[in-house]
Length: 247
Image (cartoon, rainbow, N blue to C red; front, side, top):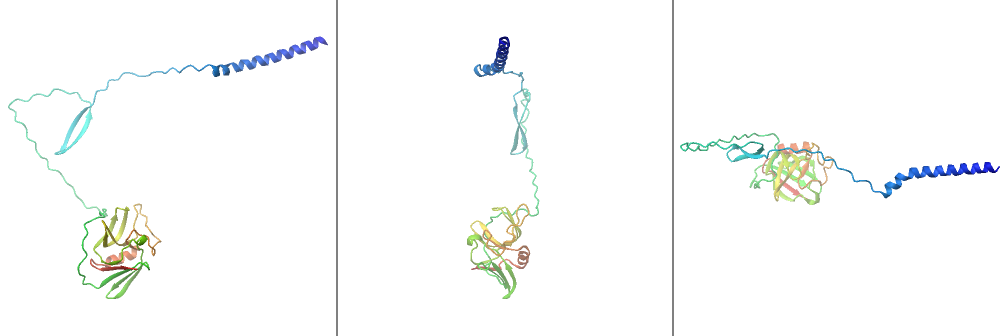
């Protein structure tokens, strides 16, 4: 009985010792990594010498007064001296070539020198814009011929007063807002910009600006009409036609 207990204790002791030995065996690398810093990495240098010639700057003459500079790897050679009696060549002028063409729908500059409105107008046409109604009334011989829904400027940006049609442009370009304004009728100057009557503006992507908002103040100062209505007015109006804007 005692021998069995002895062997049992010995077996347990050996098993416990084996567990401790295994734990120590697996723990050594981690303990060593924690207390001993890793060796510094050795950098491998991979390079070679290359001889690159220094670029020399050369000048190429295109036209009189125009030059471009380029760099090229060249080998310079000493110039060959000319005989003493060789005359110096005189420069010759090459005429410049100019090419001009008219492009369709070329953007028109927004600012031009203001042109005075016609001093007198002998016709019987008259345009009335009512801001409070957001409406335009068009008369000829005192007869109402057109009645259009309109939109004027936001925050009272459209000036009231009596003006006249002073310019007609089939498709004006507003560089300030990058928009096209078909059927443009200029009526007055506001600083360096001309305000006028025109169709719903066209954005650079082809979309129509303010579509669905006619009848309320939405513009930057101009009087805006529908596309069809503005074409009718553009074809009908004349330079000098009176335009009255009122509340």
